[in-house]
Length: 449
Image (cartoon, rainbow, N blue to C red; front, top):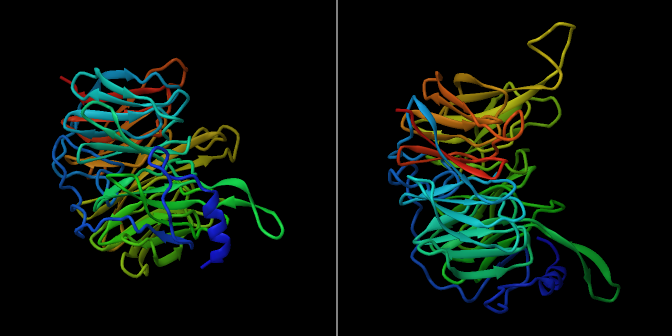
């Protein structure tokens, strides 16, 4: 626990609750608002229980499982059905889908949030934001939630795109996607600074990055956890299950109490800043570079209650920056490596060329089931639906069956010779796959007639 006096001084510098006014808070690395209303404690829905036309948040559910049991994709034959221009330089964040409407955010200036008819690709409404949105939004109970690089977090009515509320908590919101559980919105935020802290000797400090919990109805801060040391941001998307918030912080994985934000356990498992955990059947799955450099990446399975290691699996690649998906007893995780020419004429192992692979690992034992080549590399978290694993592949999207066989691949066309790249994770609903790309466009892939 850090010094409470210093924490209190930093708290006085934070701006809170934009249009709502200031709200008092208790000092310390975890603060709990006295304004929080009592809510019934319920567990989040089981993975894969969303309806066939719903993919409401990053990873599809509160656990980031990356699968919806009822969802239907285009199957083994597919083509781009429609393309929507978001009027933004890039659309690298992941879309979400609820009741035949796709919600996608612009990740460049101008940004904004678009609502698009999932069948036709027609615009339904557009909501202008202060700063761009770098993460997938979350939709729950008719409200869309999203934070911006402009330090503003929004709640937007999905029926007409009007603002319900907005707050400014003094933090920029990066790649961490919000999750809504038990009436609370949980999201990671970047640090901010420097700040001049007043006292006997004025000193310069940086605002710590944090995991924030906001009341879903009002935006009031419920709690914050900011015991991350020198880290500058929390880009990992939280996974909420069984009363715990699981979130990555680069060198560590954290389990926090979902009601209070207090730390339950932490484990040193180095990963990319953007890597997010997935939770299923009492285990937390988390992947990333084991020790950086040329060492292989590693997939961990940790006990969700204690943080103890159940098993680890070494990937044969060195770059792992995204989240695993867990479906039907299998963990799917993409990774990539850069190849270097070792000899003249070696066309299969050349400098500047990357390779990508999708790994399928037994969720209980950690043994490999299969690997599939994804060329030229992988950039997005996978989505599993209807017997197919969908994953972004640099300039398009690939589909691999749950048995490891290639189903199809689509390369997106764009103004650049090599096409737009895909950092966006796919969302699967209503017989289509939806994905954003670096050219600021949202694409729907449907069944090829």
